[in-house]
Length: 480
Image (cartoon, rainbow, N blue to C red; front, side, top):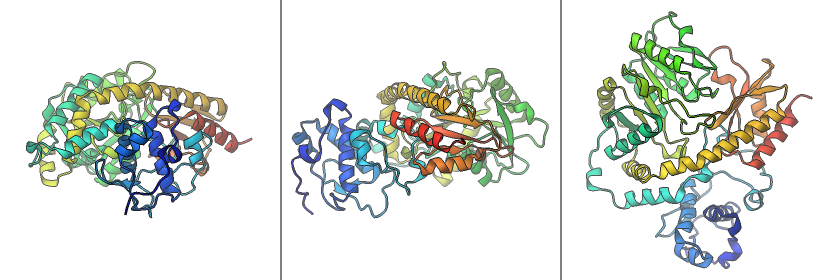
């Protein structure tokens, strides 16, 4: 099919140069033409070179916009060849359908009733995907996909590309004071796959239980349960997990799952005495402590304590990290720094079962880290997220007086509130807010026993307009 006959680019793709974010404006304008049917499946887009020339932009800016459209499923093809509109008979994976009014003028967003809840504003677990460094990542990925190195094309090491493992280790040594050798690093597609692997290696079962924080991350809980583990919830307070409250009750654990930097979902940081107590206990019973350090890059109130792994002297801690929060979940790259005694058993399982990340993605990520792009992105987003956390916390405090208490918001990308009335139905609150296009999660399901009602808000995409909508929605739903 020939390229569509379009009016001059300035007519159908108006740019507000004073507003900046030109790559984002190109992405939004073409996306809107696809969604409203003005560009039909199979139609060819203008070439990036021709479009850049007509708009008076650098070609890399247009390529970045095209790459975002392709990553979200709106178009198919690659820069340098024809880019065509994809078949959207099903909603494109990762697409966030928004009213054009918001894209062009910043006015209120129209909620689409069938929009997946996982994409709604204030849904926990999502960074600001609009700020993903598309052009830089596309350049790293394209370079490694076009010209893979010969030695990377054979049967690689089952624990991940050596270049990436070294880059990851340099990052966590610098940022989190982790102490390890590159051979202790393993690269896998997700944190859940790592938890499943550790469950198999440690042979969890009725007599080899898993202790985990209460409340706790639901995916971790379900992963351990699927592996056949008996789960023992251990209460958390303002200092983190209170391991002493579970000692002496049943068989000792083979795994202890914790999120010490920012407890998920409460956000508290585990105190140093609690950290030392946990390590001492784990060493005494031969347990592995899984330290899920899922968003430690973002800490606002003070300098965070070093990773638990860095103060472990008995080889008890398996440190688990991911690029889902700092970059994007769709990268599907996570890693673990294993205790030395687990390196051999884990590699043996990986040799039998696989579970690796595509080699060109690993190589591109290694370049992304080694060239300093991750550090630069973290520095940039730290300031953004700190301001969004403050604004969200202040707004919730303003509107929630007497109804709920708000978490400290000292770090991370999520903020909890706890209803003062224990009879409040947090699930009903969550459903009511979802119906208004807002995506906080009820906190009761995070508990195994004695649920405490509340809501968990993600702040990654908490723009001023969305915060204002949130205040209105809560004010509308709260009792008179």
